[in-house]
Structure formats: C-alpha cells, structure tokens
View 1: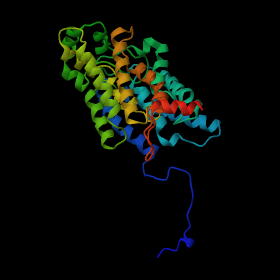
View 2 (view 1 turned 60 degrees about the horizontal axis):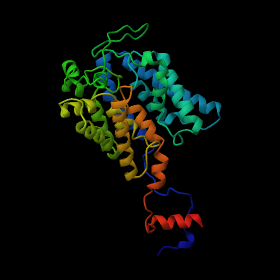
View 3 (view 1 turned 30 degrees about the vertical axis):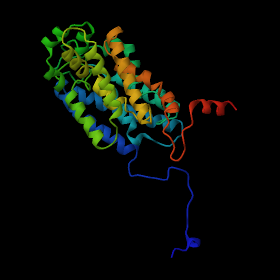
View 4 (view 1 turned 180 degrees about the vertical axis):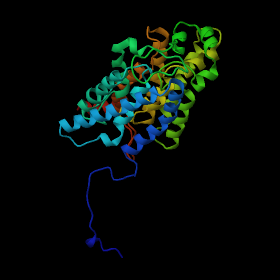
Length: 339
C-alpha cells in the first residue's frame, strides 16, 4: 500500500507532458528534408549553389550568436533555427546572387525580424521570406536567372547564360511559349530556371513527405495552399488548356517550397486545425491574385507574409474548445464581456 506521506511531489508549471523532441530535432529534420533540393541545385547550377547555401547558413548562425552575446542573453544559436533560416534565404535567391547580399539578408532576418522581437517564438513574420522581400531592394540581382545546366563560377563576377523562368511566361499568358521551352517533366524534375532551391518539385515533395512522416508538419496548410492554387487556376485558366495551365502554376515558382517549408513555420502559422485550413486557403487566394493581377510575376512570398499578419486573429477566434467546458453562444459571450 502506498504511503502518501512519504511521497516527494514536485509542483511545477505547465507543460506537464514532455517529449524527447525539441527545437533542435525539429530543425534538424527540416534541414534533412531540404537536402534533396540542395543536391539538385548543385546538379542544376553548379557548386556555387552549395557554397552560397553554406555562407548563408554560417552568416545566420553567426548573427544570432553575436546578437545574443552582445545582449547578454542565453545562446540559442545551437538550436539550428538560424541555420534553417539561412538555408531558406539561400534557396529563395538566384544562384548568381552575390555572397554579400545573402549575408545582408541573414542580418535582416535574424536581427531585425527575429531577435529584436524576442527571438524564436516571438517573431510575427517568417524571417526568411521577410529577408527575401527586403533583398528585392537589389532587384537586378534578385531577378537574374541562370539557365538550367549552368555551372556558375564560385568567385568573381558571375557571367552566365540567363533564361526567363516559367513564371515569367505565365505572367504574360504565354503558355504555348512556355510549353515549347519546358515540358511538364522538366517542371517536375526541376530542369528549369529560377531560385536555386525552388526549381525541383520532385525534391521538395520528397522533403515534404519526410516531414509529414516525422510529424514535423501537418498536411493542413500545404494541401489547402496548393489545392487552392490548383483549383483557382483550373477554374479560371488563361487559355484553352486548363489542366496544363493549372499544372504549370503548381509546379512553377516557389509554391511548393513556400507551402511545405515556409507557410508551415510553427511560430508564424495558426495553432488550430481550422486556423491552418483558413490560413492555407488565404495563402492560395493571395498567391493567385498577385500572379493574375500584380506586376510581380510571383505571389508566394507576399501571400505568406500577408497571412502571417492574420495569424493572431485566427488564433484568437478559432481556439479549440477546452475539455469539459461548453461553448457559449456568441451573443452571450459578448454580453458577458460587456459586464
């Protein structure tokens, strides 16, 4: 029989359920999931893709470590979140981007977007996407796309053969011209021009399946995001080939990279399932709206950033019901709040 008087119980604050998983393990899974896309970028654009990614990752980790050191805060550089941010910043840049430019992006993402708001868990925007939007201050560098199969030099001036991306053709409703340059197999495999980490749909889907299998992400945001874009582009095609128009829109640009690896960011995405569904649909709607009516050919970056700003609202009004607590009608809640 248990003698409760001799039990030594320790009272502590929540959470009381603990698991072996932590931030570092989740971030490591994301890095592993991104490796196929990185390997393909090296194959498609040369060794410079690997060096640019390494420089960006090292810069992001260094900026986080230096900021925490200067501000006399406990070090978080080892949790790999900064390394993931640096990797994603490199992925959303052309392989021709100068090294100094990705380092500026690292500083903007880590110091201004993440650390000044309190560090991981406090930022309200995705740091990598905010950095990408900022880096378009150097529009010439961010819109120079190397042709597939180009081996960009490691150092010195980057003089490569350039080629329009699939989104450039789609923005001018030139589906037939796009089909003459890239077929759907090229689009799926990644033998196309574009930002070095977003070209291969095949590799990004492999990474997404890995994250789903590891339960690092859930299916709600990627499926609702990509599904919304697919549905809208199928229902409102620009041309007489709705299926082809839809497939090129899904496989082109940064849709899969954004839907799988950026929109699912824990900090800047909703916590409830209903919130994630609405969040994914919203990202899809804004992406198609920008692609169809904006002067910029791609809408993934700005769609996710816009929906990041709505996460607090989704979390506030779509809270899951607490176990054992009945949900009151809305008008009664308002009356109670007014008293």
